[in-house]
Length: 391
Image 1 (spheres, helix red, strand yellow):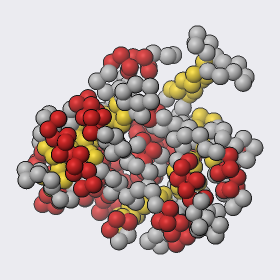
Image 2 (cartoon, rainbow, N blue to C red):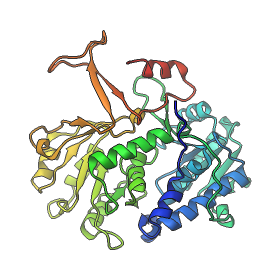
Image 3 (cartoon, rainbow, N blue to C red):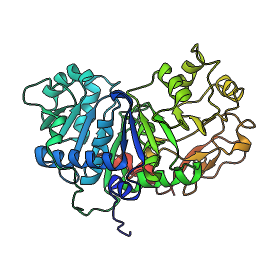
């Protein structure tokens, strides 16, 4: 296999479009960050990780926090070092988190103040974590503060040389049938998902997305966030889903920009439609409003369609990017709930239990192949072999 060098995404984007808006930080009075400023901040974060915590290529760093710009800084800083983000699901109980932390064995764990009590429990149960880092107030005297990075240089880091098969994120599955498994999202997989999304969904540098899906999920990371960095668009970073905030951003825009993209799960769209602001809200200026994560009820589609919005559902999975399909405009109302066609660099087939292709209207197992597919499951060779065994 050809060794393809991994790219420092933010350094490359900052060199191409340094003054374009990258992020709008709603947690800090709508602070606007250009790609130049974001790259410099991520450089400081990378140096802090390397110099203060000793993070090296291949090391894992876990994070237990709500959405923030700092969360994104950590993700892209680790990408600069060839290190790996382990994004922890804050909906899990401490024993479940302990199992996942033991699986990936992170050298450090970064936490938000909302999870200080959980961190106190985990600290005693996960002695392999060498460094604990508080995004805000530390809950133990020896813990580092994330703000220590401000003493580090924002200059670009020397290239350390690794290829795009290097893991970048270990993103855990829901564990509906077994223990959660850590899908290994490499630089190659995240890059391919971005390329597929930009090319097949028609994203441009003028697009602006509301980012309020949780970053512990592949949807928050990769439905729009990474693809927008790839193409030079902007993300509006929200701590989490808040219906009032969504209506305000859609109506007013932010930093002189109109929101054009919104991804959510069905419960979020149902909440919006039950809100007093729904009837007067104008979503027709958005280029794409898409649901994922679970089947969406037909009335949700119909209420968006009544507003002239081509609301659609997608299908993806943690192991594949997640973006895998696209439903063309001509089919949105004709095939409600359909996910459409495979993206540009994706192959799929539906097979029976014996491996034979399914006929028309025949149910089966969906197989997905392409450069966006994960490299297996972390520390789980049996599950990895079973997942990649199909031709």
